[in-house]
Length: 257
Image (cartoon, rainbow, N blue to C red; front, side, top):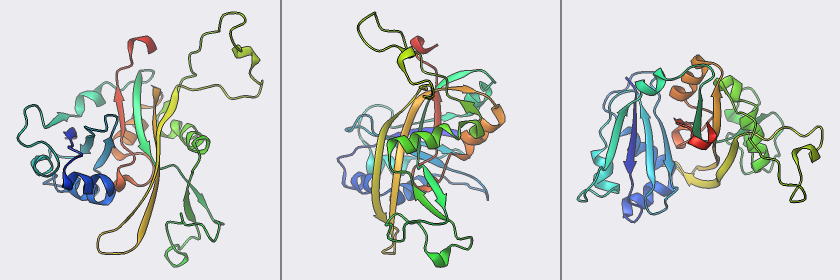
């Protein structure tokens, strides 16, 4: 059985600052809350910091976790209220059906694979000796590249992103949709709400890891329930151990229905 957890994080505590600054450390804290794992089990997590004074950690686990250690180290252990919530994920999976629409959020690490990277690039994730197939993974660094990366892959994840709903402006108040270039792609119901680039080191080594991420939010329409379920449970894109790949769904706001 799969569970989705939400854990409140207190960003003012010393342990929290360590976890929030190093995705590798936060991954370790996440895995410490899962008592039973089997080969092939996938744990996904994402840190949502919409409210900078109260970030929320979301974790998808293949078995029921215990987040007591996180509350004690990085939460408000003596405060009132719900410190964390654990919900069975099955009811959401049961709602998946072709044509159904949801709001979504995804923090991902958009990358490109190339055999001829810039030899001086600091973003190469593997050395020549580590690559057997002469392929290099480099991050997309501009918002336009990241958005294109996302939109080109949605069908393999089992959904499409509908065209944006736009109202024609009143006469004389702005350009109309007909004024757009004939070959311009239609706008889609998705936007990038956050972009970041961070560098940290792996425990016990001096090897730097550079992580480039983008957070996508918008509106999706299910095209293939099997592919979407696989994306929900298995994650999207690389760097899953560093807080990328967790796709979450929510009911659409009334205006978007």
